[in-house]
Amino acid sequence: MGLEAFPKTSGNKGMQLSVPIAPTPASQVYAFALSLARYLSAANPKLFIATMSREARSGLIFVDFAQNLAARNTVTAYSVRGLEAPSVATPLTWEEVAALRPDTVLRTSPPRPSPGSPGTVTCGRRNSPPLRAHRCPTR
Image (cartoon, rainbow, N blue to C red; front, side):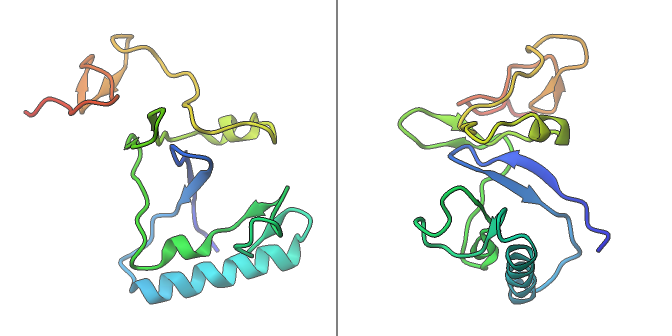
């Protein structure tokens, strides 16, 4: 298909893949996501499922095509989730994804360079405070 996906934690329980595309009507994006979910679950039924029922999808990767409905919200990278124990949606590398175990809980971020280390860029400025539960300083 020629699409490139970028993984990130959701900041809650799962992982999301973002695929940059040209501006497209939401109904077409949803139809594509539904078709892809059905294809993946038919081609690899021991790995993927496109059924929303929690009981049916136990132990499988749920391809949540409904996240592509126009009325749905998906948090962006580095968004703080409003949970009892705050967590952050964090971009992952494919190497980090490959290292995940099936029992990995994605509510926390993999280790990242500490703020102030060489090359660290946070809040759009080198060596500024890390992105956590605060606003980045305005410029």
